[in-house]
Image (cartoon, rainbow, N blue to C red; front, side, top):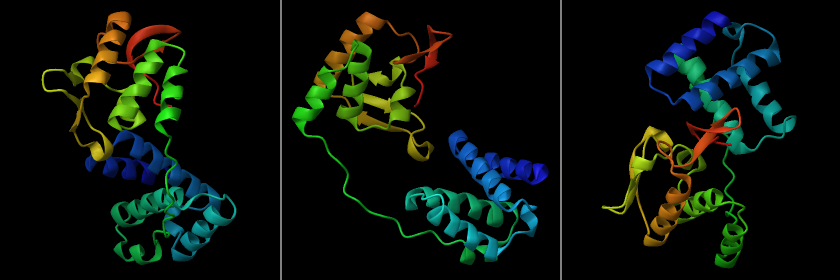
Length: 205
């Protein structure tokens, strides 16, 4: 298992998968192997069928989460073990489509107003005004705020793609107020090390 895990890790890195995706895939494969307590090389279509049913029936996972497991299993069997025929036996489950819960403008205003610090207020307004993901906001750098072009540069976002997001005058005003107070040097929203503010990104969680 250790050797196969290393081969899969090498293959993921060779294809330039994001570190968080690599971590998720390896965790999923460890869980898959642990469920049957047998060498993965000896597992086949019937095991995958049983395991997918287990994810829904016993673990009560959502279809979106099961799709992540399927993607990892496909990579394992097709890309790592070179069993292209296995695609037929590892189907993606039908995805549930639900309408998102959208806050009203009044609710958003009350949420931002209730923040207990200028930093939290700036973070909430950045997320709301740009629509960026929390992981993207956590790793924003001061240099990513381009007030001349009125855009925010996002590096290696979803799919490891870079993009520019419009920067509103209102958000820029709040970020400037926040910068004068916090004086961040590297990351716009710095995290902490041993309880002290440091030049590290804010925790993604």
